[in-house]
Amino acid sequence: RRFLIGLTDLATGYTGYNAQANFKSSRMYHQLEKFPPQFAPAMTAVSLFIQRVSVDNKETPRSSKHPYSKLLKTQDALLIEHRPSDDPRAYDPYYWFFGSHAMHQSKASIEKKWQRAFQKIVFECQRKDGNSKGSWDPKGPWGEEGGRVADTALIILGLQAPVRYRRILK
Image 1 (cartoon, rainbow, N blue to C red):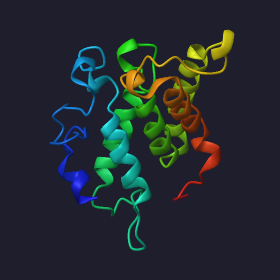
Image 2 (tube, one colour; image 1 turned 60 degrees about the vertical axis):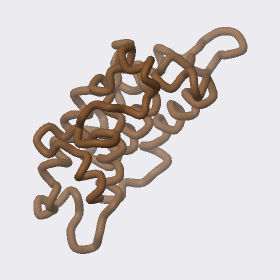
Image 3 (cartoon, rainbow, N blue to C red; image 1 turned 135 degrees about the vertical axis):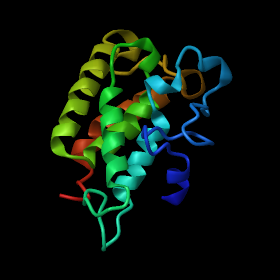
């Protein structure tokens, strides 16, 4: 957890890839202009998910006594602010996958906001014709590298988060 906290701007909640909230990304350089990381803060979603599932017996991330309780609330709000949308700059199945898992470990009301937006956008974008019916076009920042199979897998696994995994904390 300390490593992730070191990459996170505690005031804004953004988590960077290799330095504190610097919006540098592991994305291919040619994708950064088309898919600016601040529109789909994937590393923040990864960080929030790990923080939510990395619990100990003394304190829980939802407890106001937890040292990072304020940060987790800030990151929840950040992901809700940047929930899936029809903005082409925000199309990112990797972000949606980790965002869905992070939101599932959050409060139910927050998770519902995320899931409504996520389901709306992915069902609108799902292919409804030809040999690709039921899949998603590889048009996100990792589409060239992962292709149709990777984007479809990430979306399906993101959709399954609320039913496949139990909440760690009630």
